[in-house]
Length: 177
Image 1: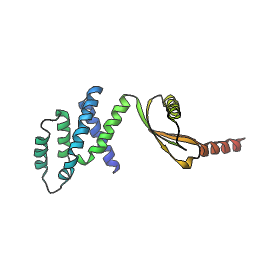
Image 2 (image 1 turned 135 degrees about the vertical axis):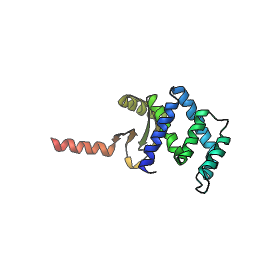
Image 3 (image 1 turned 45 degrees about the vertical axis):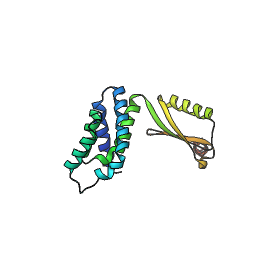
Image 4 (image 1 turned 180 degrees about the vertical axis):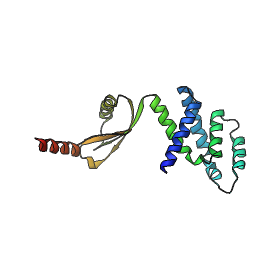
């Protein structure tokens, strides 16, 4: 995806969130939008077909979505009208980010050197929540190149608690003395 598409997706996501000012309403509309997008997934070839006129697509989609939530229907029709329906997946991701941010939740990818117990995962999550001052939704993976420790990536922050990083830090500390 092009950087410009990411910017456009963020703008549409912000617009959708403004339509649904209340967090509970936003979450509900987001769920409906996700379900509608999943249901429409079989028609994405139709929507991306350049030989069909935009007016035909809008008319057919208006009929298909006639019973859908008004905000969701209108949002999808605006995407089609502006030839942005192809950005629906990144828009959904951005809306989810807005919801998480409003709930003070951050996603984190945590790579560990080897499989760890659920209790150890919870302890790492607890420490990261303390550092970030946010609730954490984490996804653990195993990266055998770490040998020991872990690396966590949340938002724009990288926390490197790996053996290799510890050795580099030690080497730098010894050079300074």
